Image (cartoon, rainbow, N blue to C red; front, top):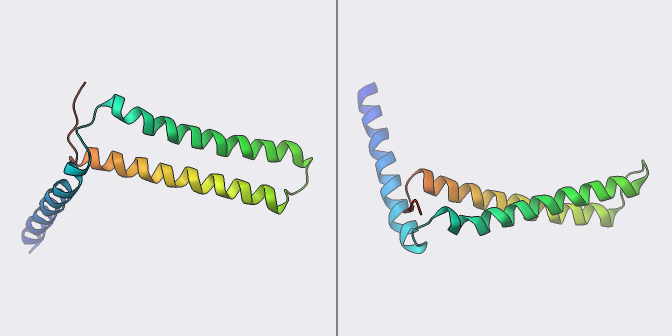
Length: 105
């Protein structure tokens, strides 16, 4: 029974890879590192904005808790940052699992 399960898992993995590649690869042209740089830059800028806002709030609060507006702004920046990170992670996964074609240069 364990061999049959292992074989089925391998078949499932192959089906997942083939189906994802069939849908994702035509949607995004062949990638190089330079193609990914704008995405990486965008995520880094979002991270920097979020962290900068956190430090600004801490500096201006003088030991007090921040107000609702400051927290709302920080929340919006965190949501933007986290969403972009998730997108980048999905892209990395697609490359790792060979759903996308990648060129060396």
